[in-house]
Image (cartoon, rainbow, N blue to C red; front, side, top):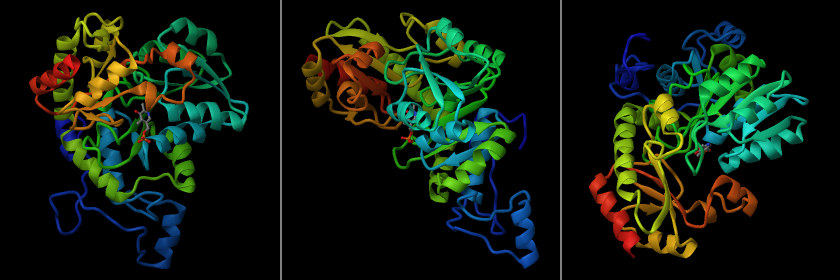
Length: 392
Ligand SMILES: *Cc1c(COP(=O)(O)O)cnc(C)c1O
């Protein structure tokens, strides 16, 4: 669409298609398939579908296509493919590309299911995987060799909000001929400029900020047209991980307010981090937007924001952390993120429960660690809630 549109205009209009009725809101094309006017037309479409011609919803659908165009426009990539969940996107991006004998280098600090795909699934099919400390460029340099096909990392890690330098890792990877695949969920498509910084393929769980209201699972892979349509699409459309049209409609509606929501949440996160820093009941307060964060400079250069999550360590450990969680009035105990509702998570006993202790230690997942996904409530109310719960 129009190349010089700014983000907020794109988020409302990009990719829109209207039927002969001229409906205002995006239509949900809740149909598995499409009727061909003639047998010749069916044959021609199976040879090569034209622009805006569809065959079967597993391959593509007008509502899903609107969402793909809108997110590709936002991300600055040529194309995108929408998937049934964030994990269908991560699995699709990696599995469609890699073959037995290929080598992948990945950051170690990963969402648990991403770790499963790399450690358990890919290795089963003869892909070699090397894990590195994502913040240590020397480890990336040592691990990436000319036989490395791809690198994978979360640009901001879960739950300790460690940043990976997209530009620096992409330069190292590209010098070896490897493709850079970034899971960009915590950075959000609003704060990230991953493509400008060298990423080739960008993956989102749209379950998080893009829906933003905790309604539906979804995912998307953004990249060049040749990666999305020649490498990824054949794999996705034949293995069944496509996004449903109804989910795409939810995500399209989420996109319209995405910029406003992410900025409001990040403003709230900064206010909360400042209010908590130095509290006597807390050890570390981790927020990349705080000057005290060791990667504050990188966060500002890479995202221009500290993002929408804050992590902090309750000094007295698990029991004190549970007392704190149980005393919260506004923030909800759950494990999603990017929701309009503020969500508090205790990673050591939930999202990261199954990690062995040595890996929890290595990732900084202490017994008192709380991950807070800041929502859209009034930041003053949230600060009062958090300070009240800390006071017991
Ligand atoms: C949630 C999440 C995923 C998985 O997304 P689903 O939509 O739950 O499948 C992958 N990576 C990161 C960083 C996430 O936060």
